[in-house]
Length: 28
Image 1 (cartoon, rainbow, N blue to C red):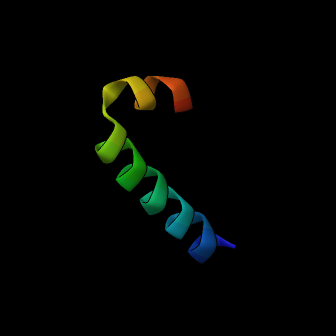
Image 2 (tube, rainbow, N blue to C red):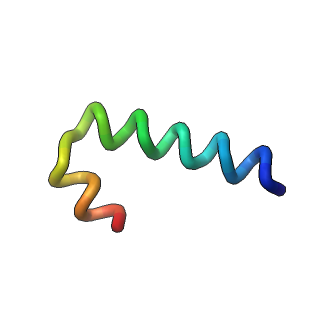
């Protein structure tokens, strides 16, 4: 549902912040 989607998005953002822009490009 929307709640789990939001949680997943927040986890992804945290991973991106750890790994950097290269990870962001890789995810997208």
